[in-house]
Image (cartoon, rainbow over all chains, first blue to last red; front, side, top):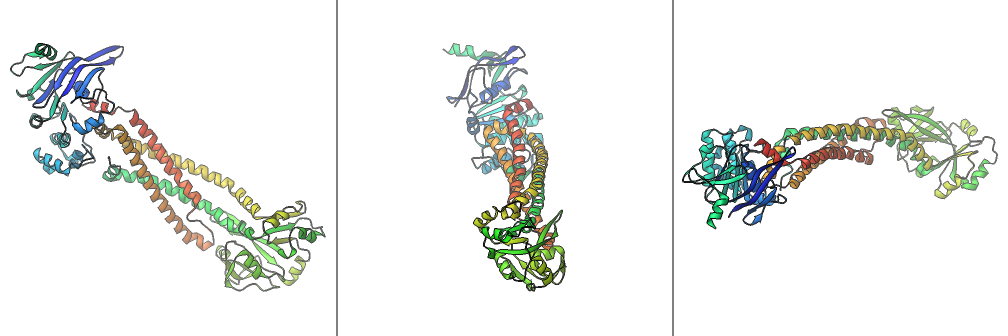
Amino acid sequence: MELTAEEIVLKYKDGRNDLTILNELNVTFKPGAVNVLIGPSGSGKSSLLYLLSGLRKATSGVIKFNDILISDTTGTEKIRYENFGFIFQHSFLIPYLNVTENICMARKDMDLKSKAEELLKKLKIQDLAKKKIYQLSGGEKQRVAIARALVKEPSVIFADEPTASLDKENAKNVFNILRKNSKDKIVIIATHDTSLINENDHVFVIDDGKIMEQNPDNDTKEPLQSRKKRKK
Amino acid sequence: MLNPLLYYIKNKGKGLLLLFAIVVCVLGVVFVSTIILSISDTCKPLMVYPYENFTAVRLLNDDKPDAESELSEKAALSDCIPMKVSVFDFKLITVSSSSMIMNFEDKTDIGVIMDKCAVQLTEGVLPEKGKNEIIVHENILKNKKLKLGDELNSYKITGAFSGKPVFGLGYMDSTAAEEEFKQPRTYIVFADNDVRSRLKELSADDWKVYTIDDANQDLDNSFSDLNLILAISIIMLTISISIAIAALVFSQYASRYDEFAILNTIGYKKKSIIALIIKEILIISIVGWAIGYGLALLGIWLVYINVYRNTGQTMNIFNIVALKYSFVPLICSVLFTLIPTTRKICKTDLISIIERRN
């Protein structure tokens, strides 16, 4: 299972000028460990996440999930519905539904109630099953959002700044939950908080429109394009 | 896939508010239109139904010695029954109409007239020949608050009858009848369509022929303005309330954009989200219409049994025209809510909502 981006270019119109966010970016994500995208504000971490998940369309380039082309956003709802889970900084829980109902919204064509109950136990929020969203704390809401992302057993989990509005304790918990799920799933987290990263995570640095994988042994950066050329 | 009942089940307050607005609109339209249309419903038995069975022919020219022979060319004289007509007012809720009393000469058998007009005696006795006695439709007794033995237009009421046409019939005092029917001026003719057409050939200078078609035409003319005012009022009222409902619905859906955004993000197609909105609006509108219509019928029935029935007035509780009018608020509220709401969501980039909040 892999998610690949090839020669991705993303440009926006800024008045009369073209602003290049991502410049011929190449990267492959696989399960086994959490993949963390880091970089300064405006570097394109979230933009890359949105492109990889089919929520946005690149200016050029190809994005594939297991050889399924998703770089054209037309018709990616089915792939997202069946294969992708999402966690954002804001939980985006539906306010008039309770916790269990929110989790089960992940897929209405499946009966997810028992899986939802299981997940709530694993996330240690089983007491909240019937609670309304306004009754939850920020950390609890984020755990419900994680449960919603996990309940349909997606192949890929995209998390865009999932810990930005959480305290340190909750932030660490969220990262640990995602790490536990990265063994058999591709987990990609965009974050600016490097303190949450550990040595087992695959870290990708986005800077100046390019992506570079940070060597796990030390803090040297190695451009992905040059590493590919060396391997050849 | 997405349950269109879920939002309003979980947000009962919002649902009830919307439902209330639609119910009030439909109830108001049906109730008011039925009450107004009941004026015409009451006037029909007075002004039209008598002429379903006979045609009235009146000689305009006093100085016409060959009147009877001219009439006999068009219809058998045995079918032409001389009569004297007098009118009286019949009160309705808001206006007054009129009904007629037909008095006949002694040789006319009232029982035969009743058979031909398809009316049946329900109370009292038939009037006596040679006396100022009449029988009237039971609705006239209710409307005028009269009972048997009372007088109407100087005629003593001896009995009441039921049936479609609402009028009175009877005899006159012998002396008055002799004077009146020496040279009859007004006849009722029990005629089929052929005879009716022949009667219409009588000279308009000398004769006034009044058929069921003329009666219907007069009724339509009397109510054309009222019906037009009713239609315009209903449309204006409905549009005003529908705009208010649309504003309410629009604001309710505007507060749900986060929900639509996350649904689209996790894989629900925009089309299915729009379909959900359409179903929600349709369901609540149809339910509101049904409740409003049901309540209107109940209210109308209560008005009928407490007011109309006691005053001899007619009301079609289930009125086809009012039913058609009831669809105006339903259609308006659906269109006025659906069009801006779905248009807005079609134009909105739902993913940008996620991006902005992040």
